[in-house]
Image (spheres, rainbow, N blue to C red):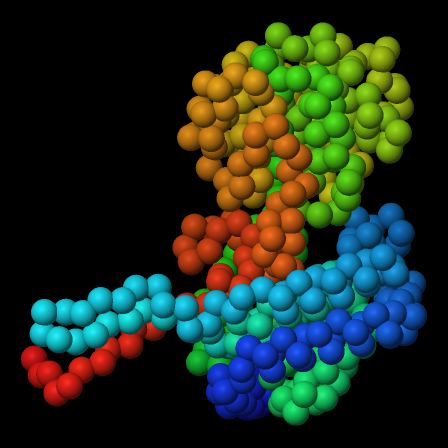
Length: 415
C-alpha cells in the first residue's frame, strides 16, 4: 500500500469521530479558524508571494493564485458566514407511517470523505474545508504545485483550530503537490466517497476519464449574454462590463456577447465601458464593421470560428450578431458549457422563451453573470459550481455536501 493510500485509509478510519461532534463544536472551530486567518494574514501573504514568484504575471491563473489583505479578510468572512448557517445534518426530508405500523424517516447525512482537486486557488482550501467540516465530512485536498506554500500554511491554520477545540486534526489531509498523486486519489475505491474537480477544462476531463471513484463535475464556464431587440442600452452596458471585467479569471466571467441585429447601431455604446480595461474584442463581420472607428483599433480583431466557445479567462470578449432570439439560443446551445447564461431584454415573451430553452445551471434576466457564486446566493462559501445534473447543479454548498438515509422504526414487524 502506498503512503497516500495509507493516509487515506487513516482518514477513512478517523471519519466516524466527526459524526459525534455537535453543531456548536463545529461552529466554534470555524470561528477560531476565521480569527487565525485574520491574525496570520501577513504570514499567509508571505507564503503566497513564494508561489507567485514562480508564476508569470501574464498567466491567467496568476490572479486566481494571488492573495491580498482584502481577499484574506473575505475568506475569513466566508468562514464566519458558513458557521452562522443552519446545519443540514439531521434534517428530516420525508416522514410517514406505513399501514403495517413502520415509521419511516428520510434524513440528511454527510457524504463521508470528500476530495477536491483544484489548481491555483488557495482560497478554495479554506472554502472547501469550512463547508465540508460544517456538513460533517472529512476532507482530502489536492491542490496544484503552483499554490503549495499558500495551501500548506492555510492547512496548518486549520489543524491548529481543530486541535484548539480538541478535534482530531487528521480529518483534513493535504495531499502531496505532485501530479502523480492524483492517480492514487482517483483510484482510492472504498476510501474516498466522492471527488470534486475544480479548474480547467483539461483537468476536469482528465478526472472524468481516469476516476474509479464517484465524481461531481464543476465544469468550465463558457458564458454568454444575449442583448435582445428590447434590451436597455444603459443597464446593458453596465451588465456587460461587470460580467466581463469584475474579475476575469473566474468561471462566471462573460466570454461571448450576442446581439440582435436590430440593435447593432448601439453596439459601440454597449461595449464602450470595456475600453477602460483594454478589453480585446473578437467581432464577427457585421459587429466588426459597426465597431470599426469607434472602438480602439488595437483592441478590435476579426473573430474566427475558434473564438466562439472559448473560456478566455482574460480581458477578451467575442461578439456574435444574430437575426433572432431563436438564433441566439441555438448559438448558446452549441457552445455553452451549461454554467451561466444571461439575457438582457424587456420583452416578457423573449425572457420566458430564453428561460425555458436555455439549459444551464444558472439563467439570468437583466443581471450580470458575476453573481454565480455560493456566497452571493447566500450559501456561504461554495465547494464549486456543478454543471452536471445528477446530485447537484449550480453553486454547491452545505446541502449539496450531504446525502440521505432512511431510518425505519418498528416494533417487531416481519415480512
